[in-house]
Length: 85
Image (cartoon, rainbow, N blue to C red; front, side, top):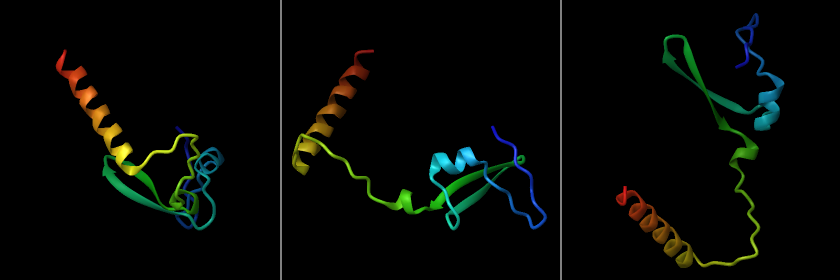
């Protein structure tokens, strides 16, 4: 947990560790949600790095159909494991 101070114009400065961890920079947009009881949730809504499609490199190629089958099989296996309990 980090503590920040409200500035003269109502601004806060996010601690460097958060800016670095999330790759935040000037102009990135955040959404504030009042959860009540003095709790405010902060959500990153506009960020150039967050909006980029991740580039995943793999030595294995699979079609969309292969991926759907693998997901279905994993779900079936997970269901079978859960019903044994």
